[in-house]
Length: 329
Image 1 (cartoon, rainbow, N blue to C red):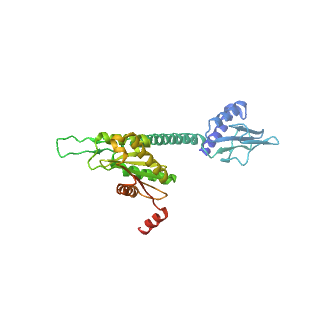
Image 2: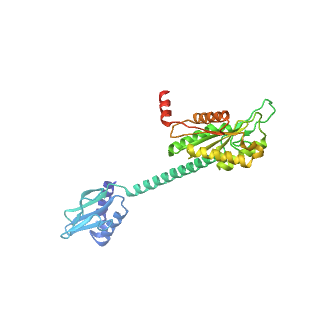
Image 3: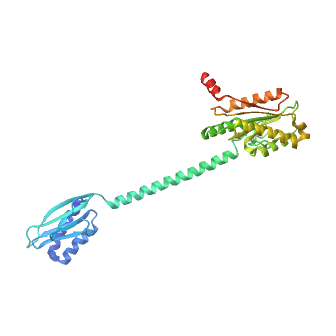
């Protein structure tokens, strides 16, 4: 493109000399006009018998003056040339024209960068919307887990989704216990914090009434201060996940909860004498939910068998546990 424009300029410089007069003000203005609309040429020097004349798109960018003579600057970034041609001008000898040009098309670069910027902005917008949607869906999933369809033996019965909370005690369903405990164990492992899993049960031969169960569930929610971590357990029990709590703290909470039931619900629970609690903790172990639940349930069974204690904790040795896991891999 630079060569094409330079050849056009040389032809104009030759033809304009006929009707404008070589190096007249009108002639020089025609050179400036061409240079201003050129896409590549930055500077021009015309040499004739009457002297040297310089033209620039931007003053001082491409031409310097040495002892009154114009010279193209050296070391210009992305600059090419000079291009050189002789000019046949009537009445003139040894007339030449030279020009320097840009390697880069700045207008094209500007348009390209603008288009890329629009693409990047569009991608960022899509990413932002995706992130907002993901956060919204995770938050919604945290408030209400996946529904399960209930089915009956009667084909005419309409299936309805089963919610996160039970209708009996308004606490989380037992089927979600292991999944939620697994999630909390991963979170505590990442933050290197402890966690306690507690199993609470009324030792009755018959299934306790909904009213009695609801009293126990409500007291558990109020005491442990989170409904999303309290679950039903069978017909007569509940389970509780207590994050950021070690075994000693969990044992103290279990005893305090037992005392509260004894004090507040004496008539319903026979002074708390038929309420038993078993618990276990993560205790710096990489343990799965099923294993931790088994430990708490084992502690609960021991509490059933020990008439002198209503609260029993499963105390593990982290070092021996790791050795046990390693030997069974």
